[in-house]
Each structure stands twice: as C-alpha cells, then as structure tokens.
Amino acid sequence: MDDASTGSNHTQPANPVQGGKRGAQVVSIDCLRQLKERKRLVLELRAPRERILVLWSRRGPYAVESHCPHRLLPLDDAEISGGELTCRAHGWSFSLETGECTNPPSRGAALRRYPVWVADGLLCLDRM
Image 1: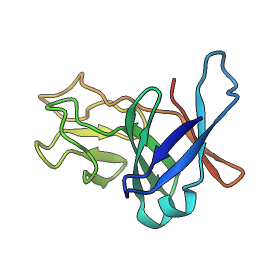
Image 2: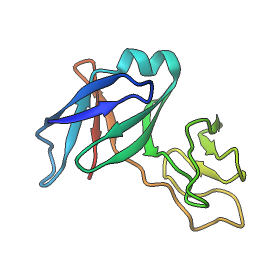
Image 3: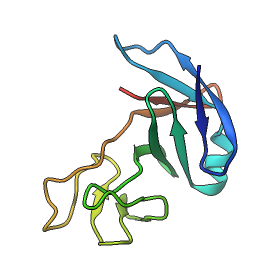
C-alpha cells in the first residue's frame, strides 16, 4: 500500500486499485472534500516517490507534476487562470488540458499530466 500526503502534514492512505489499462497504477485517495475546499493540493506519493499538484476547477480535477520544467521550481502556488497554470517565478504558462507550454520562449516544454477522475467519492489518479 502507498501513502499519500496532501502537503498539509496530513498523511492519507492511497489504496492501489486495479486500473483498466495493463500496467496502470491507479491510487484512490480520500481527499475530495479537501480538494474542493482548497482548490489545490500537493500529493506526495511513495513507491515511486512523486509530488503531484492536483487542482479543482468547474470542469473537475486536473493533476500535473508539481515543479516547473524551467528551473524545477515548485508550482504549489502557481497562478491559475483561463485553463492555464503559470509559474510565479518566471512566468512560464502551461495548458491544464494538455500540459504544453503556451508562451515563448518556452514552447516545446511541457508538464507531465496524470489522468485523474472522481469515483465513489474518492479522487483516483493514474500514475502511469
């Protein structure tokens, strides 16, 4: 079993669930209420270790790697507007839908996106 921390020093169990894809590693986390209230959470997952930024919007959840590819700075407090996430350090913007960088000179850079959805009141995230 993996553990997931929501970045607030509160550790919550992340239970592996059988994914629909061969080799998929899906975790389900009981943090949906907290995500809807805060609009963002940083999940710290182990085995393998990853920090994932999960965002809540009117369209539902989005999940991306938690650091900017420019200088590997954290995106925990990134600005979110118009379907884009913008790094406060250097202004690089990324589409929440695709993960692709949307402004020059950083075109071609991208954030890793994670498939994320809600099922049975839990946040489910595919780590593949």
